[in-house]
Image (cartoon, rainbow, N blue to C red; front, side):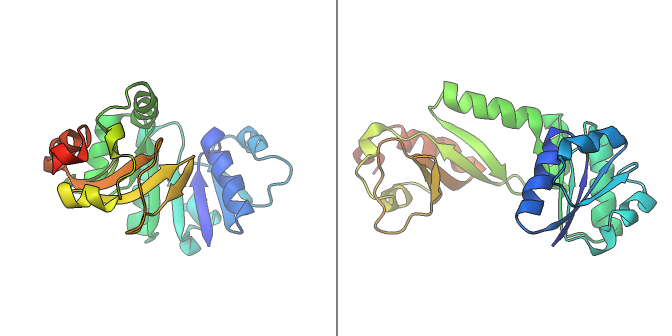
Length: 221
């Protein structure tokens, strides 16, 4: 598919190269032509110098045929504006904007504009390793009612089938990270030492699930 990226910083240039390596056509926009040096000599996509929410610039980048658009410049306002133009004016289905302000990111997410809050994501990743207990939110739906959370489980859960979590809590196991790789569990999957458990859960039930998984399966039953 054709992907348009606004912003050729470290994130934008990395995305562009990865997408091209995966076989997609890529156009990347930046106000500075110097920024395109980050792409390297092997990049064969289209580079466009200009403002990422300017319609002429977007058209030159192929927005009319694009199936995805990523706004990853260093400006929150520019990213949101560009994302809205891509979605509302050109009907691009897959749109995401990087936002530095976590509060604003949540607002736009609830308005239906997919966002990645850089500061929130970074701090969450660090906290997840410093303070592994409890849970850390990884995703939430536009209404904020449903969340994907990484849950800390007590060591007494090791050796139990994953289905036991669903039997004693209102959560559903979405996937497990095991030895650095994602694993979609089935009825025969058994929890192992070191597993990171990711569950889908209603926001109102998070505390209940945290409490259940912080104790032994017998106590949670």
